[in-house]
Image (cartoon, rainbow, N blue to C red):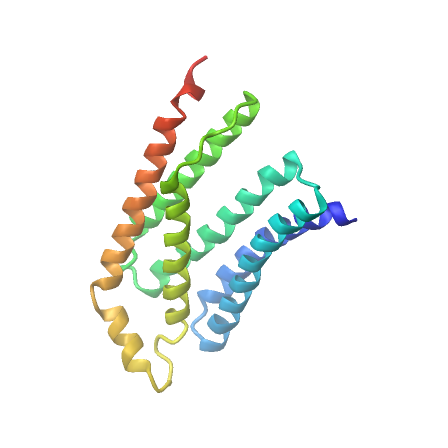
Amino acid sequence: MKKNIPNILSVLRMVLAPVFLVMYVQDEVIWRALSVAVFAVAAITDFFDGYLARYYGVESDFGVFIDPLADKFLTFAGFFCLPFLNEELFPWWAVGVIVGRDVCITILRMVANRKKKKMETRFSAKAKTTVQMVFLYAVLLAGVFIGSDVNFEFVIDGFFQSVILYYAMLFVTALTLYSGIEYVWVNRSLFKS
């Protein structure tokens, strides 16, 4: 049973991602607040599945495949919520670039696995993940209070009416695209027959 816990946590993350998405796009503050809690629980499972796999020494090919895939589900769900908050600040084309990059890299990983080769990870990919998650947490949490009756609502409204978030979204999109191009370039040997 212990050896299955990491994979169960990864699958749980995949299940929680659409639950979070459906809850977050509701208009009521309570649903958005609960959805952020769901997002946090799902994100925590990412830490524990890797930790438990190493602790029990039960890393598997399935786990190596399902863990990053579950991460993608959660990240995609987070980015899909953003245009519902403000489509001008978080345009769909930017979300499409971010999702498209990750889908392409996931396919590349599958090709590498079939060829029994390991893809080389670059610093830009790790930086991309960190920047994406910090950006998502900040925006999703602030988005909970849009249109709500809270003491600091003017701060939240000002946050979403400024151009800061638009340029932050452009930066995240550019970094994501750059890391994808670098991934393909560094691992170009995978395309050789």
